[in-house]
Image 1 (cartoon, one colour):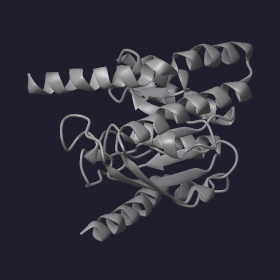
Image 2: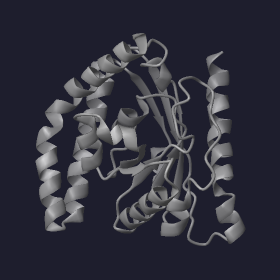
Image 3: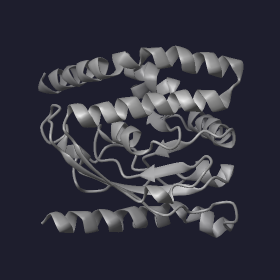
Image 4: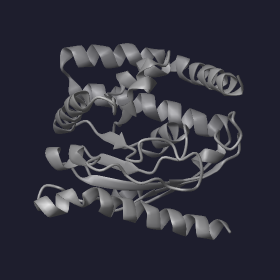
Length: 248
């Protein structure tokens, strides 16, 4: 019962913080139907930025951004650790130079209001219980990246709900290696203080958002491509431990 109550509270929080983005839905839909991807990306960026910055301001989050100059032009695959629900709006607040969608679990697409919004911004949905469906989703993501849309993936597959970092899923970076776009590792620390620590949304969290130098994927050998997830996991983890050591 307690878990259900927390879920309902979170759903209401999502609703009240996303409802004002409704005008972007119609603009995004219109440009998508017209095949104007450039204008569509502009509207998606406005939507994610508006929501992310609104969350940061409303809940008095201290967001420390480092390394934004490392984000290259063109489509990229952002790869990040995943501490909490707040990771998604924090990405919106931090990445203000290009459109982003998310590689999400199918269940997120079914949440009222939030599900529609995350679909609007060109997210893709992985069903890890269905291998064939997952392969189709990867191909969909590769096509989006080739069309100029950027994506964010959390290769742990689920929230760690705390400071620790889970193991990256094997093959999680095929989106980048198959499309040839750069991988941009991101280390996030502190988002779990906003919700997971308390079981409800709590203001005043301090969050670190560190963007590492991009990794080109076009010229990778087969062996390098196979080891890319492990390499990126180590980059993110080392920085995360460094951040946490400074907190002590």
